[in-house]
Length: 104
Image 1: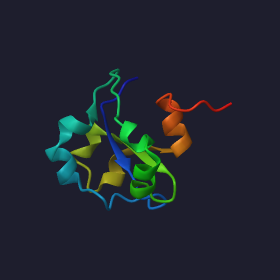
Image 2: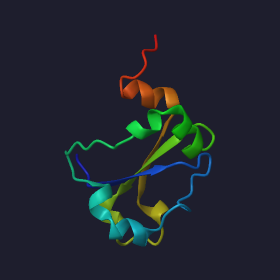
Image 3: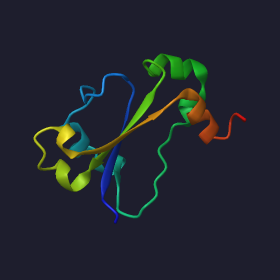
C-alpha cells in the first residue's frame, strides 16, 4: 500500500520537534518535499559526506529523516499529527550509502 509522503531532513537531534520549520513553509515548497505513492526519489545528502560540513550542520552526530503523510498534512493542527516515521543516520551510514567508504 503506497502513501503520498513528505520527507524532511532534521539536523537537531536529539530535539525531535519541528521547531526548525512550519506547516506553512512546507506547504509553500511542497514540490520540493513530496514523494508520490510508489515513487522513488533521491534525497541529496552528498554534501554532508564532507566531514567538516557534517560537523558544522549535524548536531549530536545524527541526521534525521521525518516522513509525513501528505494527505494528513493539510488538515493537521501540527506537523506531529501527520508524522509517519523518523529515521536516523550517522556520518558512516551516509558516506557508506554514497559509496565513499568501505566498512567491513
